[in-house]
Image (cartoon, rainbow, N blue to C red):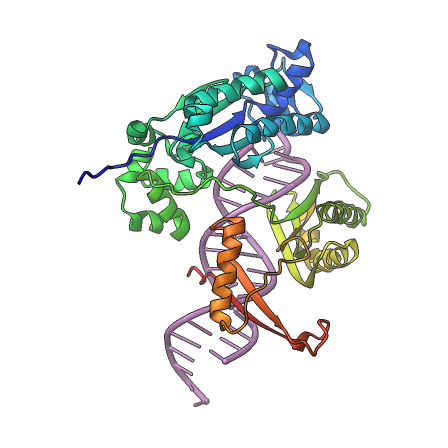
Length: 414
DNA sequence: TCTGGGGTCCTAGGACCC
DNA sequence: TCTGGGGTCCTAGGACCC
């Protein structure tokens, strides 16, 4: 009997439009092509590669950016154009593979496993995807191809601008271990600072550290995750059909003196905007969080959970106002420069999902069956908690005590 | 140089329950 | 009266991403 050792091939694509907003501007305005372009005046939302060559980066303050690159052409964002471009790009994504997980308006993971007989090798699929985005949407897109998400994501970054990079299955460790830690998706300034402080600069350095040591430095989840990544273990699948978990709106108004009730007026407008979007999407949420930022750039949040999920402006605004009143001492002390509202605990579509199960199974078995069914429909990781409700025929659904419920969920991770 | 407007996930501690 | 294990839900804040 022969044993086959199956080495899976790279089938995960990470596709990412280069300098998205800036590229759309250059596409639509020929005079901007080949020139340093900055989208957004106050803060850099996007910078063309010509501007990046001068050190301009997104999220940088506008004045610093103009200082680094005085010749830059600064343009106001045109959101409709970016939305339309995003739509075009995602149509091509979804036409390329049925398994697409969007990460933002301009990037996505695609799993092309099993598509070889129809579409060819992953590398060919990636090449065709790049050509189609260029021809049909007019934008350059870089693609990384690898066996895991983290490798594909890093590969597309290395491939930029306008490139394609395949990480072959037998070249993964070499590729990974040479990387500086801050290049890894999910490792930001704070984590890399901690790692550097312990003499860990490359992923190879991290791989030489024990999991316990990494947990000691970074905490449980981050330590475990990074240990696995450094040892090239990243089993996360490309997940389709992920739904958003919160809706929010915020507004920064700087240090200019404002009428005393200005922030509360802004708050009302923000709640209205967020609630409107929830109603359009047909979703409801329960946890209202007020976000504040102050003159010294410190931040604070105050949150509360409503008795039942809603998408109505009125209860959300009332909660927001209570939180604002509660935070008033901090606000007066530190000087408010930003206010925001987020509605989280967005659960389902407001209608819930009903499953019919045979009677006589017992609560536990019924719950297990229901969870299996939900996983089948929404993916293995989509369900984190399930509530089973049994309804007595002789009581109106409005009478809450008529419902009996059983509940299960993941054990707390502590 | 003085920092936008969205989001996601994780941690830690407290209140409360059986 | 005190103690423990096992659990849920909520709030506040931090890190990270584009």
